[in-house]
Length: 282
Image 1 (tube, rainbow, N blue to C red):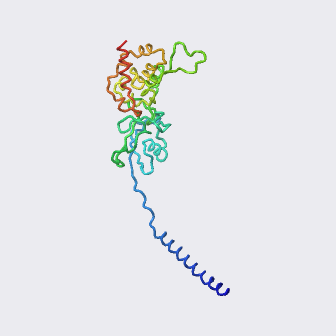
Image 2 (spheres, helix red, strand yellow):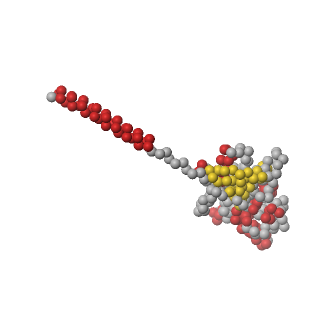
Image 3 (cartoon, rainbow, N blue to C red):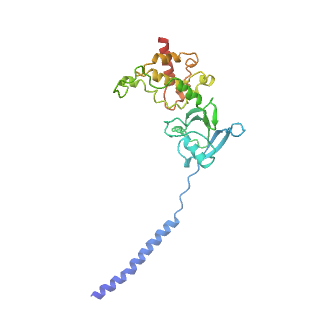
C-alpha cells in the first residue's frame, strides 16, 4: 500500500511541472506580443526672446527657441530655465523664489508686464496654444543690463527717497518691545504692504516712461502712502509735504495701467488718489 502511494505521487510530479511550464510559456508570449506604449506627440511651443549683450557690438535682436510642453513646467519661467539649461546657457534673466514673492523675474510677456513665475504658458481656460509664439522682452522703458535684465538702479533710488521705514519723534520708551496698533489701523495697510517692488506697475505707466527721472511712479507712491497711513508713524505731514510736487506726484493722470498689470492684484492708482485727497484737504 505504501508503495502504491509512492508511485502515484511520483507520477503526479511531472504533470504539475509540465503545467507550470505551459503557463510560463503562455505568459511570456503575451508579454512579447504586447506592443510598446506609443510615445506622446510633441507639443512644440516657440519662444521669441529679446537678446542684447553689451560686450558684443551688436544691435538687440530676437532669438527663437522651441520647447516641448510635454517636457516642461507650466510657467514661462519654467520654459526660460529649460532653454537656458538645454539650449542656450548665455540667456540671462533674473529669478529667485519662483513663488511670486521676490519680484525678480518681472518682464514683458506677450505685451504685458508680469512675473514669469506666475505667468502660465497656456493660461487656464484658454485654448491650447502650442503652435503660437510667446514673445518675451525686458520691462519696457528701462535701461537694459543684458537680455531680460533691466537696470533697477533709478527705481530703487526713488524708493529710498521716500524713506520707507517707521519714523517716530520720541523713539521707544524704556522696556518697550514694539510699536503697537489696533487691528483697525493694521487693516488700513492691507493692499499696500504686499507690494514686492517688481516694478511691473511703474514700467507700464506712460507718465513714468516720459518722466522716470522726476515722477516717482505707482509702486513708490503706493509705498509712500503705506507709511503715511501707518498709525505708528509720526511724520505724516513731512511725508506729504515732500510728495507735494508737480512731477513727483501729479504726473499721475489716472491711466490705471498700474492696477491692471499688478501681479499681486494691488491697486496703486487708488493709493495715489488717496495721497492727492489728503493734500487737497490740508
